[in-house]
Length: 326
Image (tube, rainbow, N blue to C red):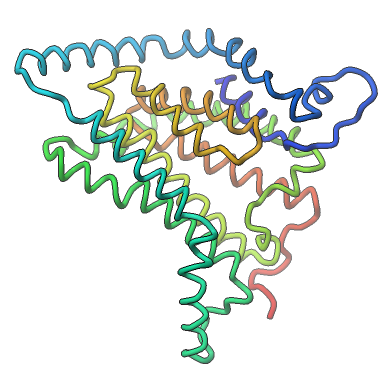
């Protein structure tokens, strides 16, 4: 559990923070991009034994299940298509999301349509000038949910008709028995987030939607978009990916998932991208142990909401009205 806390601690450190210079301190070591470059290596090496102790039985059980499954497939002289289908489909979807799921596609396709709609429908509630940035994030969120859930789940079910989608981390039975994991994670992570939030650049980075401070209406809509893409992300990486590949790859399904999960963090602060490696292993292992993605989603959502609230609070930018003015 401490691995999650350290992961989020490192992930939340702003990449260009102006740390005080006199004397030696951990903060000073992180003061420049080049000084940070090798830091994730000793951190991962230090945390690895703890992760191994916590999850070695889970990994062992997965490998035994995979060994039995592959033995049956060999005896039947059958070929397991799940790795090929899942990995190729994931590569196509993640590539499309990166190239067409962002602001540029919104500006090229969605925004012109909104402009025309507003011109043709006088007095419409589109109000592009006021909500342009929020609409762009709505497109970003929709592209994530479509790529993570709406497209791959039906395709997978169409190809593998006998696999149950409920086995892709969607079962709620037993969730209450593992709820203590969620509260334990938060008891460690939230104090660390409060300390990190004192860094000067933290408030400038979060929330991503800068209009969130205008009104609670803006803030709530932004968090709904943010939470929606987190749910889609968990369903895809810790649900479909692991559920589809657990019998084929055993514990290797977890580590194969960590590669693209880390890569979708490229472009974010360096330590956040590296922290995703630890988070991917820990949350993936938890998902395999609990057979549910809900604990990971709740951790993601709670931490994200807390980061946004702390960033707004520290720069005295929390909304004062419910509806945006004008």
